Image 1 (tube, rainbow over the protein chains, first blue to last red):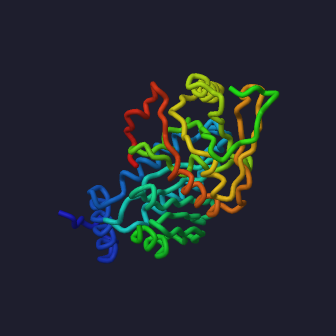
Image 2: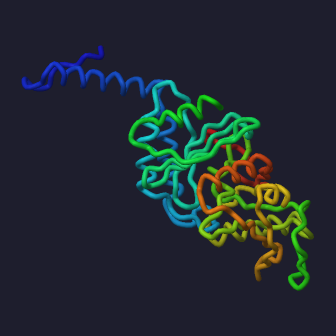
Length: 148
Length: 143
C-alpha cells in the first residue's frame, strides 16, 4: 500500500499527497527503473579517487562539489532513462558515461560550478560543448543520450 | 630501452604506452574510457615509447610508476603516435633519468570539451593490455 497515514493532525491533504508521491518515487528508484547502480558507482569512484595522485600521473582528488552535483544530475534523470556509468578525471571532476561502443559513446564531466562539459561520438559525427545544469535534467543532454 | 644519449624523435608509426593505475579507466569489455587520456596537471600527457624496449622493460617502467604511489598497475593503453598526431597533437621525446623512453603528448587545447573529444577519439583507437597478473583481467565494474 503506497498511501501513508497523516503523521500529525496539522497535515494537509497536499502534504499527504506529497509524502505518498515521495514514497512511490523511492520505490520506483529502488526498482530496475531507477539509477541506484549509478549512485552506488558514484560512491565507489569517490572512495577510489579521494586522494591526490589516484591515477599515478598527478591527478587531483575528486572535488566534493563535483560529486554532489553529479548525484543531483543522476537523481534528475527520468525513471527508465538509460543509466550512466561513473568515472573521474585527473582534474577532480566526476564523469558520467553512456556507452554503446567505442564509436557511440557520450562522456560528460561535471564541473564543480555546475557546468556539464560533454563530448560524444555518434558514429560518423561528433559533438562537444558545455551545458549549464540548473537542477533539472537538461533537454540537450537527454537528446544526446537518445541519439547514441 | 633507448640509449639516453641517442634518443631519436618520435616517429608516427611508433607504439606508445600509457600506464593505467586506476581500474575505473577500463570498461568491462576491456576498452578504454577517455579519462585515461585527459592531460593533467600539466598540459602534456605522459607516455612511454615501445621503441627498443623489451616486453619486460616496458612492464617494469609501469610497475615502477605504480610502486612510487603504492598503487597497482592494471595495464597499459597502447596506441600509435599517429593516433595523437591525427588529433592535432604532437609527441615529443622527453627522456627521464628513470625512463629514457619517456615522451610527452603536447599541444592540447585549453578547454575541457575540446580535450574530451580528442580523448574519446584516442581511446577509441587504443588497445588495453592488462598486466599479466592484473585484477582487471576479471573486471567487476560496470561499463
